[in-house]
Image (cartoon, rainbow, N blue to C red; front, side, top):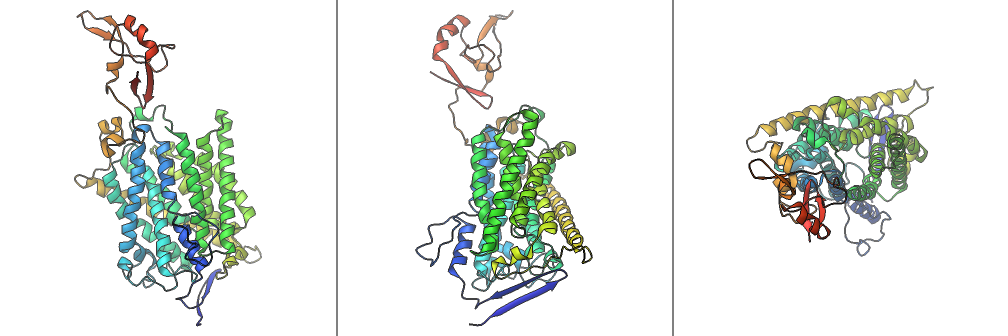
Length: 525
């Protein structure tokens, strides 16, 4: 067999790839990446070896949907599930059409964005991928498609409770083309300016985490704040869904990070360990910080810290030793917890804290690479080596790497925020594609006005609250007057009852049970 060697040297950072004939790939590596990219039927019947990790990046899509749904009010829960799932479909088409080519076309040399040489996945088949010689390019394109889909899915949290879904889908296609593809090109394209300069980003601290977090903040800014009364006494409507979504994400994140080693190798296992450690430490620290204020062990707080830890592991898990992830996880849990206050300072209604968890967490992970990246960890995949000199005796080159990482972060933040704001404004100006729903629609909830279905269906007899308030007296004009009671304020008496006299109401109280749902009430006999 013929050997092919691809090498490129940059100041203090170089990679050396070695591979056998490009038409022959290890079936275990191929199967590992397939299962990391998506949950599919068991591969044992068609593969000689079966990878250990049976999780997938695409499994993160329903995880995101459940997480967002649980964090929202009941009346807008299903709309967020729909937005995440539909944006996944939009990105799949975009990536097939020209997204992969714009991000990874090796014939483009401008360092900013690719070209359309691979439009429609043209000539993308069995050659060694640009990311690793261990897998074919067609599989690499599939795996990277899931990264793009997850990124846009995260960003969909910006539409929470007041954004229309059709304009959000149009925006998703444009954003993936003009924002995500350039960011991916910078970090991972063989000619990307960040890649050739020596920036270290394992699984997407820039394109995925900073991209989605900053874009979510920018989209929320353009969309505007929710009505003030919608912000009062807000709390997640289903914490069980929040926990379920978090655990699904955690499972999928192992495919996200470990799969970025592009093979069933020891580097992938290190990435999986680092992901678990960061997640665990982030969840513990966030929960402790919340406990000091509320004296409660909040489930939402633990889930938030867990996700923040996973975010920080995204750019660092394939570069740092496992002990470093303890430090990264602790720092991330604390910093991201305090970063949730940024939206109040900016007065931007980032309803699901996308900036605090994803953007800030991604920044921490990227900066950590300058301090903890270890060439021995990188070489565990058998094909890649990295030389990051951190010795102070060599002109403090760790500071040079820190400078590169910081510059890359600034470029990702600035470009993403500006272009996202411009795109959102332009889409909002198109007739029929206004980003924000009406005030009345926001009051009713996005599920009713946008989807026409509900995450939790119910029997509804009356829409008007006053129709359930009991008659208390007769007015001067002879019309009955009704008194409204807040839920639970009648000391065991029915909270709502038909429009009958108080005497009749007292006889019927034992038959009536009220069930609240998002400010409405239903009555069951």
